[in-house]
Image (cartoon, rainbow, N blue to C red; front, side, top):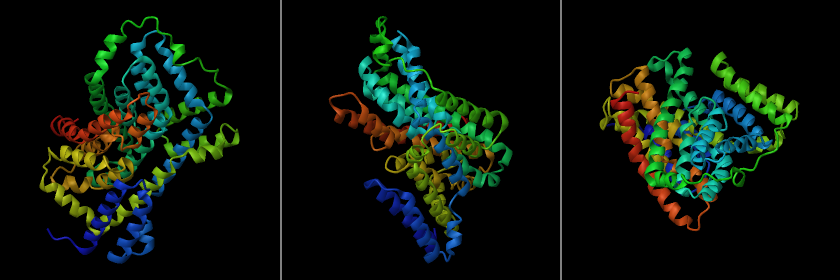
Length: 435
């Protein structure tokens, strides 16, 4: 296989960035932009303006609008108070608590904050509750991270927005019309919910959940006030915040309005009516993730023009066919994601290759494109229970246990094994069953 100098240079730069990010906690978006400029201008003969066109402006604006809105909701205390109200629904039935928490994390992630923000919000409460009700921190981590990642591909969530934005760039190449993009976004979201739910609930029950539920059966005298004291009533600002969240969801689902546009309008009312401290809300936004995704998109765009993506596609196609491609890509995405950023590196790289991969295995159509995109997104996120990921690390940091070393090792083994499990599950679900 002949590889041109620009293509080889782009692959070397990408590999170097991924390896560098494995050993240092850095923002690869900055490196991606610099790498794109280097390869584009020095090796591919591109002008600086051509390189900058790889910055996904539309995606950037949607991410800024949505994350500002939900950062404000977190800053003004709405999300914390809402979470406490939901946990209290368990009343005296202690066995309902893990399931309520799973649904709660799923809901919060779905409506907009995203998997990292919702885990950062919920992990302290969930891990503390686990300690009080005698549930192992490992089992609780599976539920919290599984719920957050399962809902991460919601069209309202930053990760889902990233995925959908990347898919929109090549949708016409695989026969996906513009008007079908919204439905496809929800299809991928539900694929993620189903697969992540099966894997993580399976892990929960097999690693101690069933034994805990049997032991907790006798907890009829359990007092919910001991873990979730009754919060103060919502003030008018928090009620307005909840109302605008409902408006956003209804506007996007029922009236097909642009989520970014609506988030900016709603965010503007937050500022005008002093619903939340806009300075604190801006600080709470995940700027690192936004820069990471957009910066890596610059490099991926240059790689595409330099021929680097086609070279990677040819390598993957050698070991794949129309049925196994979902499992192969799900496994590779998971393996790399265990050491790198799922949404910042793996998704921009692999989702950009979808049309080429489909062409290489002779399955270029909308259905196969959705299945392959689902495999990439799910494979990249199943491994995030690992303590090397932000989500796993947040749960370990808040775990109520005297031996966090044991928890670290168990989560590490589980997370790394998910690259294999992800490959198998994606092969079965999207290759054999064609979900």
